[in-house]
Image 1: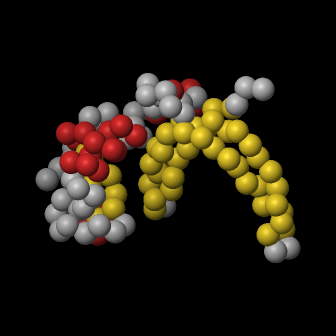
Image 2 (image 1 turned 180 degrees about the vertical axis):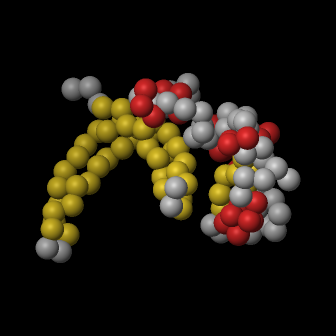
Length: 127
């Protein structure tokens, strides 16, 4: 049986989603949780290094999601810290040149790590 491919997004804040990669759906089941049944899924990260947000279905295709390889490069470059204050919690991937102003999500040079406070304060400004 062929495993279904799933594009996984994570909700960071209301209206802020991040692309987490392409996964294989290898198993699904229901299990009890209190008074209800809960669906559980087993996913495996697709090892295809060419799989990224561009492989998303047509209705989700756009270049705002930051590909996993770019996120990893930014995380390593910024040492897992806000570039402004050094915090290590509640971090966001931020566009240096905002996406709404033509900034790319596809290159690490346009992405930086900011804590939630600095990211929300920056908004869509170019600093």
